[in-house]
Image (tube, rainbow over all chains, first blue to last red; front, side, top):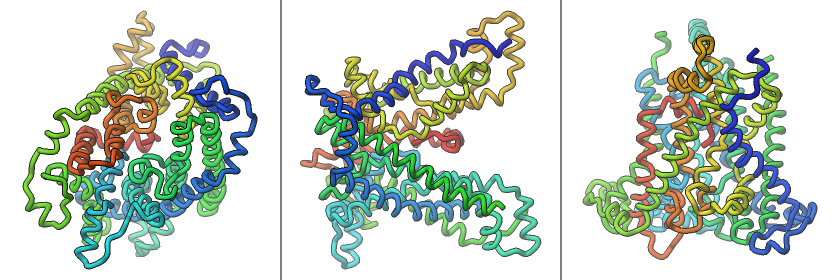
Length: 290
Length: 273
């Protein structure tokens, strides 16, 4: 009887918001990506087909932003993943005060990225803490955010700091689903900790590690606040990520059609990366399980 | 149970990691409680220099920071309760009623969980501009109401909740509305706490959309106001900036202190930062 009722009134209010501010903007973005659209010149709106996409692929700034974003992902992901795994292992090993350590390490993940960026901006400042220490050690000051070769790595370092606790908590939760008896049995058989880690724990948490890789990649592709607050995409575009480039095009130059094409290229890239990672890492997981 | 004894090195390493995690925040608090414009560098400066509320007083006397704080409170205070109600109502409907297209719908909502939000940034801007809502509280609130996390989380939550009580009430002739308000909602506390606290974090910390959807200084939220304040390069006062950052952090710290378990549960179930 209940089976054939309409999706009751309960769903309707949220469905309205989801349709209006979720689904519709997504479809609208797709249409926009085929238009030349400057909101200040509504008389010039016209259909341009794939021109926006072609233009992106022919623009050095787009490729530069893509490279910056890729460097960011490739540089931070292995470090963040390794550190998060180690921290999770340490947390799992702590019998006492685990709650305190977990809280202290996870807390940065709940903070506003603007706040984190401002704190690191003060640490990286010319007269800031890091340079103060370098000077005290008799070394010369470093232009953390002003040197085109260092600005991106400085932001990446901050990202690792801000992310490790978050992923450590995810990995820790997966470790905890491992039955105690299994570890106990391994211990009684006298198997070394390292081997337990490698042949029992690692295969067990592997799906979560895959999830962490996917999540961190997706999020890294959306980096925006960090360059906005720390460097405004500079110096010399060295920290202009894809989303920062999109933001500039859309809201400084009002190229809304072009920016929408960039958004769909971003979506496409994220989709491709998800598929690739699922294939390579997923197959590895299947082999490890077999 | 009494597995291997923990190696002392584990505690040493964890203490180091915990210190590394908290040090930048302690530094933020210390600078905000200092005097003058310099950044303390040597450990002697951290403890030796006088403490003062000067930066906080400067921040809230005259400047726009009080307005930023008010805006953040208004937006979060309106958006989160609505999110909670929407999630309960829609989640309950999804869990209890099998309707045509339910599977497709769930898949679509799940896809939106991982959809990069920047994709809908430009069309949302144009849509809200067309509605005449740019630079209003409505523009800051409405996009948050489309977030599918709460709905999916509550749908899952209600599936683990036995429908017997609701069915008994229905046989007794209760209306669907009465059942929802008087039976379902009072049983939803633990689930709604997860939705509420994660909704709070996302709304309170939101940046890109509030940045784009507001144009006048009086409509900025705390994160946007702080970020733009930091960019008006001519007179960056670190003390004031980090005092503002501390103000933005205090409610998060409070939420964390009381709802850490719920925050973690939300993270594990896919609430995005």
